[in-house]
Image (cartoon, rainbow, N blue to C red; front, top):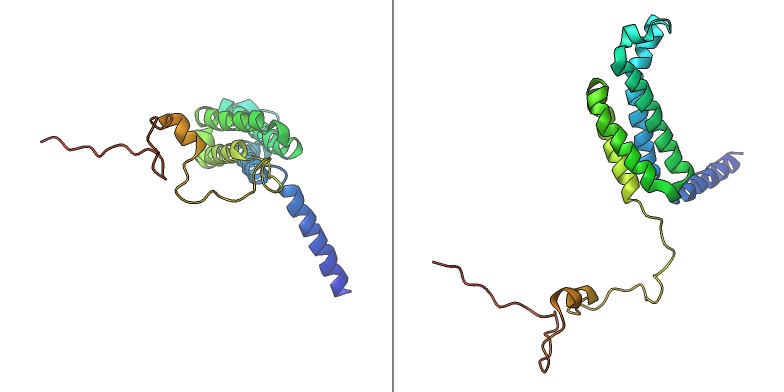
Length: 178
């Protein structure tokens, strides 16, 4: 019985791990937490005072807190559901987090704002994993001392008749004036 439970838990954990690696999971989670944090203060006030006079009790900052918190939660969930459009959701999340500093209690006392900025940045930087080496490559690093193709593009081709040193062209050392 115990082996069966461990086997099921292991399979569930492995499937969660595979699902998590195919999308910007941590960026979405931090955006989700930022939205929840921005919602805590206004919704807490709403629960204390009732829904009748919401604008009077929590003010316009509380209304924006509810709005921005809900939108950050939507951005976090959309990152998980649609990772192909991660750039749009990530930039939207960062912008919402930045604007929350002005409109809602200093961005949820800085915590929600920082969670949103970090989560959106992580989601923006995330790229899908690749299986194996890229096309035309072996998956191995070049030997040391071999110049990159980009280096010859920046520095230009070596002078004609002269062989380039193994590490690429090297500029002569400069002398300090004085």
